[in-house]
Length: 289
Length: 314
Image 1 (cartoon, rainbow over the protein chains, first blue to last red):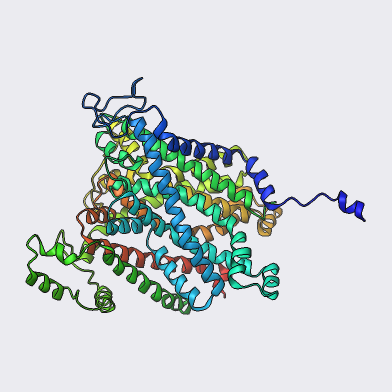
Image 2: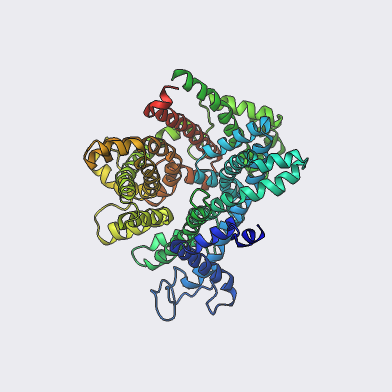
């Protein structure tokens, strides 16, 4: 008997299986490389040998890409490459912080609704439906307008607008986990509510929330760029890809490079997060083992 | 069906009330005292007291909300500070422009997204599938305002094929109106096409595995007939509801598209209102889009029941 037991190979854990599937997914790997690249340049911005992103030069106004300015210069002679690198900070920061706000507010509310049910659930669900009813960008624009234009307020506005998705998701996942045998057993042996949520519910609803968070970062980066493009996000002279496009649209005919690079950067970083999110979803999907 | 619609309408009431609470709270987010801004430089105490009285700002907040929501229910969303027109009238004026843009964008999305989704599912794991997925993912990742800028640069500035901005009513010059709206509709439609392609592919994959499609093939029907008459018709049921729900995305996208192509619609109205601090207009727009979205949700539910015989009989 003991021989049989020792010969049995242990069941692969879900995390290991998921990790293996993720590593075998070339699209997800491309996504990881893209995201890692942008995170790296955003972190390294202060030590990179580049011009100041706000240093103007009236002799270098709207110069096309050259050996001196690889991506060209803008309407007041600032180096576009430098502004792109520093702009990555604003975009990534906005993406991550706004989703962190959405998760930090949305998940507890969703778990509370799914766990407590009754009036708590009804009130939170109606609030979620109301927030979902206003289109994401219009809601973010309205909030940013009332809070005042700044990157911080844009992040709060995007975070609040993205929150309902996390409430819905964690509510549904909590209700699903509550039907599992191990939760009923935990109830039966007298584990308290807080411990039950902390030890059994949160770890089990984590994978779908991680997938949604990754995909939401992609949306949040586009939303931040949109708000900055409209003048409601990062304020000048601080660089942001959206505000760079806002200026660039006035010089399309004379200086098209001003509009080219920020758009490509937004596209690549959003594509990266979308690829990672899709890869995580496939890897963590329990139906597809 | 009538009972179902009435039930759904009743459920919608608390949600609409919740939206109104949210929209009303927006003005409370404003930093500083709004009366001080209205009173001007001198800040005469008598003027301040008069303004507080006039706008009922001394009343308790619930009372202020009740007054505001009752007026809104009667179509009074306030007066625009910028144009001095009633907010509802402004929205009514701008809405047809955005509706035209939305309809044209939806046509673009359907023409690209549906066939791509069907083909991708039918040719699963072939180059057609991979290409469609790659294009769809790119469509979801490209910021539509940048796509708009690039198209203006290429199609209008460089090639001179289409006008870069402006608006012509279809009642005045239908052909010119389509020409002017073609590029904005394409920009707005591509993002939706990507979503639609993914939903259609997913629905088709489920349907193509079903017993009735296998039976249709076993009966010797042509592949085209199996695909169009049996598979697509059933796969369209969830796709129709998703299309209705894309309405929100469409309105959000219209804000930026109208800004880039200088189209005087609903989206441009909200941006202009934000920059002129015309808060009554911003509030009115959020409230109207919220209520419209709930109406679209209801429409999606009704469409789903009408298209799905199993749901209809319940």
